[in-house]
Structure formats: structure tokens, C-alpha cells
Image (cartoon, rainbow, N blue to C red):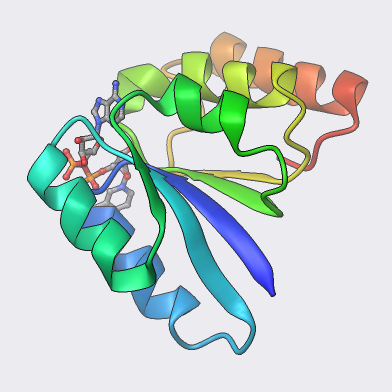
Length: 118
Ligand SMILES: NC(=O)c1ccc[n+]([C@@H]2O[C@H](COP(=O)([O-])OP(=O)(O)OC[C@H]3O[C@@H](n4cnc5c(N)ncnc54)[C@H](O)[C@@H]3O)[C@@H](O)[C@H]2O)c1
């Protein structure tokens, strides 16, 4: 089973659910959302662990196969960086990766240096 962790439970996360639901052997194992109602609905759908702090998810859920970053744009840099530094190796970040080219390039560099797929 491919176990995914999703940061954010907003509109685009619903689109990821649509895709995940069509992949045999893939599931959502953990979800983080400050919107607790949206997070609970998503967690209940998959029987996933629910966190309000995405950092806690990244720190505690070390056996995930992949992380999807679906947080607001301004949070992408900090969340991707935190995920890589927490040891996660497969990270899909919603567009835009960073809020400017330098921020995006910095994350790509960090991922390469850390052996993470971004
Ligand atoms: N909506 C679209 O059509 C669309 C399309 C392509 C890409 N995107 C991208 O996807 C990302 C998310 O967009 P959206 O439309 O789903 O936004 P949204 O505002 O609907 O959802 C954002 C989610 O992030 C969560 N969140 C915010 N701060 C948090 C925190 N500190 N810890 C945990 N969760 C937190 C919120 O609870 C919410 O569930 C954005 O980067 C956007 O550019 C959106």
C-alpha cells in the first residue's frame, strides 16, 4: 500500500482525492489542516490520522511514501523545507513551488542535496 500524507484539506486536496481514489493500492494515511471540520471529513474518509499542525504530521509520520503539500502559496517554502529536513523523500508541492524564482530554486537545490524527489 502506498501511504500518502496531505498538508491542507482545501479545494485542491479534493482533486488529489479524486486521483488517489483511482489508484489501486494508494491511500491517504495522514492529513493536516487548521480547518478542523475539513480535516476531520478528510481523515474520516480514509481512516487517516489527523493533525492541526502540519509540522507534527511531518515529525510523527515517518513511514509515509509521499507528501502532498496543498497549503496556501506563502507556506510552500517552509512546509517543503520542513518535510525534507524531517527526512521525507517524495514530495509533491502544489504550484507555485515558491513565491518567487529564488525561493523555488532554493527548494530544488535543497531537495537535490538531500536526495529527495520534489
Ligand atoms: N484551487 C485550485 O483550483 C488550485 C489549482 C491548482 C493549484 N492550487 C494550489 O493548491 C494550493 C491550495 O489551494 P486550495 O485552493 O486548496 O486552498 P484552500 O485555501 O482551499 O486550502 C488550504 C488548506 O490549507 C490548510 N492550512 C492553512 N494553514 C495551515 C497550517 N498551518 N497547517 C495545516 N493546514 C493549514 C487550510 O486548513 C486549508 O485546508 C495553493 O498553493 C494553490 O495555488 C489550487
